[in-house]
Length: 151
Image 1 (cartoon, helix red, strand yellow):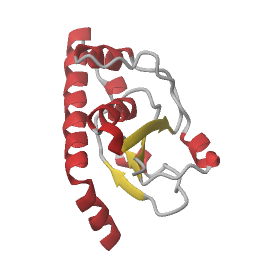
Image 2 (cartoon, rainbow, N blue to C red):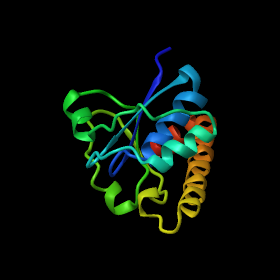
Image 3 (cartoon, rainbow, N blue to C red):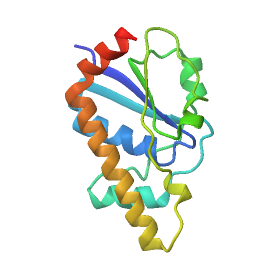
Image 4 (cartoon, one colour):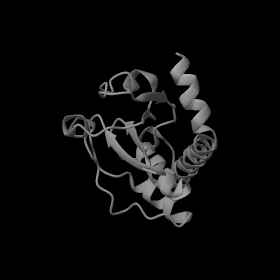
């Protein structure tokens, strides 16, 4: 059986989409193949690298990618999931084929204010929210497909 192709998109591909990609590839086993991209690719967020290392996931060598490069490549995705705010999520291009679009809004670690420890704590919260959402997605993706089909 081919793996289910999933693309996570956020603004800079520096935090939320990177975490979602890592979690789905690890927790989803061979059932899923996740990738991530940004509307305006930037640099990996050092806070995100640090909080992922805390749970023994090393994303420090990941590169940020442009969502429009994936669009131009013609790659087919079963799911395109935006993980930014709704306004930016609406900027995500429409991929050809039968693609299930989902939107999961998570706070942007690059917008956190406070001292280093406060920013880390808020980033951990986002990391944990993403992990829970990924676990729910893995357990319920067939129901999600059915619900999207009915729309």
